[in-house]
Image 1 (cartoon, rainbow, N blue to C red):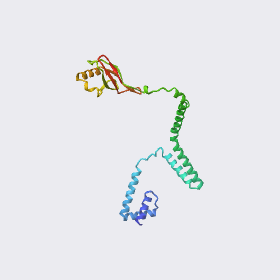
Image 2: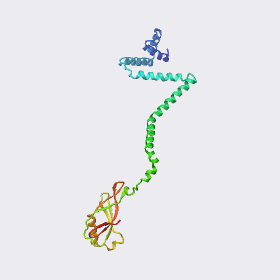
Image 3: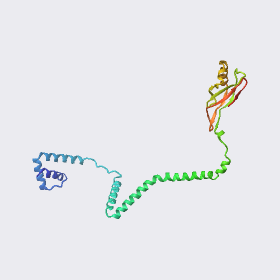
Image 4: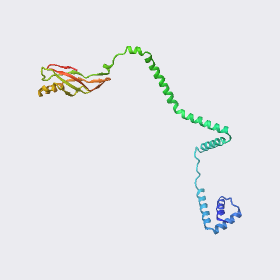
Length: 232
């Protein structure tokens, strides 16, 4: 007996499927061939080790998975029967693909169409009555923005002459900076500048606004000994 034949007979022997005459021939070969005897011993040891292992419980969803695989295999086999079956198969696949593609888009598309219709229903009367709205329109330039304004002031040591000052006011009505027009700067003395600064420090302003929100702005005021006027 050759080693190739002995290798096949070893598995039959371990499974109890070998006949008596073949068993004797296999035994003689194993006595003469150390390699085959070692292989027979290894397979016998492996069989005994596997026999003592606890049985493995099949997964709970194995039955359902096998049914799905069998169903897919049957459907695949039926598509090869004729051209009509193949066409039905691909038509079903295409319908399923389109259904899966459109289902996530159905709600956003419907919501967009509904929103567009609602906005059109709300805006349509404005276009129909555009002339009426135009006649009743009121200029909003003065309402959208306002300039900074003078609120109150106390004069300190000013002269009787008018002193024009440009003031930068922040969004809380506080003076950030001031400047004197260039044509008036030469005759502004150090003492008068100090009086101007003291007066501005004791002056309260109303901040400018844009769309109802306060913002910084500039205004020109005229300082006198007894009063402070806004000049522009």
